[in-house]
Length: 182
Ligand code: NI
Image: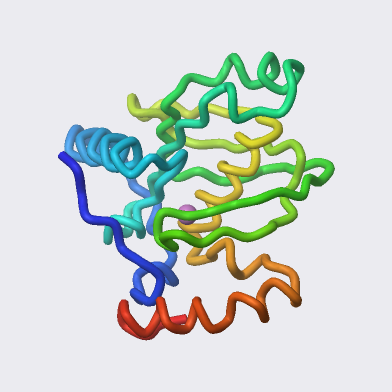
């Protein structure tokens, strides 16, 4: 089922998700709905707050062609896609990368964000089994972006001062349309 996506300005985007005590069948259905919603919206990631929920879960589906080079594609190949992560926690990061980022909660907007180059994340999979993945490149960017969402942090918080200033008007107008929360 495709779910409505919450846009910037809605206060739930600033709330912290709550870890799920156990991965129930209802939560697996929620994750499936989130994948459908993400694909329909042509996004590569979606977090619970973006569909108005506060369970700690995010979904990611980064196609291999989004990665810049073969080495990164090979490195990420072991990760099952779409990736469903319950209670994800980033446990280590390495290096840095700078690139364009967007978000389904900010339609028609994008900005430049510096992220770690390599990210290691622990989570529970759809069977409730603890997993650890290490990812690189655009997939690492997606994992940081989605785990940020679950902590109430948005990509615009990471913009440089100049870009932040140039986008301020648009962001303010978008927020005002959706509840007024920055
Ligand atoms: Ni987002």
